[in-house]
Image 1 (spheres, rainbow, N blue to C red):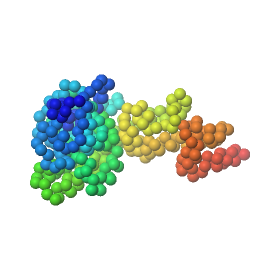
Image 2 (cartoon, helix red, strand yellow; image 1 turned 90 degrees about the vertical axis):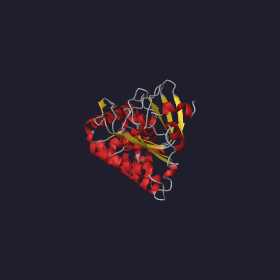
Image 3 (tube, rainbow, N blue to C red; image 1 turned 45 degrees about the horizontal axis):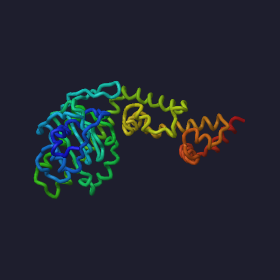
Length: 332
């Protein structure tokens, strides 16, 4: 693996590609780990960082080169990137994204990102990078885990309207101003507040995106329900309890994006949809077969009958046996 000095020509384009298509190749690729802000600046050939735990990069001030080979980066930092001039077309399933010129992506420590050397870069925008220790003493350290978009795939980027771009641009200007000014005892508080605001707006804009893309999302919701039915009806497909990750993979999206999409369209997460289907299947078997509760549990994919009992009672307020007794009584 090349050292950072040897890899700087490749990594110099990294920030520009953060919001591109994550086209992981099966062939071998160069792996570069970035563990701290100093490594990040060294790799980008940037001046010494103003803060040891935080940095913000204005794309327009950086020169860039195209990497010659596919490169995989492990960035052990938080990274939020904003592109305002992304002259490329991204696809989500069979559909093209409608906002091409403004998009955001979010990465948390430990994620790996594959850079395609053919991806088009951006000239306008910024990327802010910070170590987990930068926010550790703030409420944001606990709050940041609730933002599920940090686990979205790159092709599930947030696409911004012109008005949203202006709001995000203004937050970026505030951060850059704080970063470039002389560091004092208020600088970190101000920057963390800006990051907090940026994430709040990002959550709002993602909720808007689920609504504005409803015409594209409705078929995906239907497809999810079809896959769920198929999972229970085809014994060869079934392998234990249905998992959100399985359906997300079938629909070519991340688990969190699928769950948030379903919640925006139906009010229920992917896991709740699965549990509802499990209960409905259990009810069918309890009322229409002579199988024991244990046999039904194993048939549905539970490892222990007690697990079915707990879920069934949680969702229906009665045990499986009590439900069966009531169904049999109603048949009299």
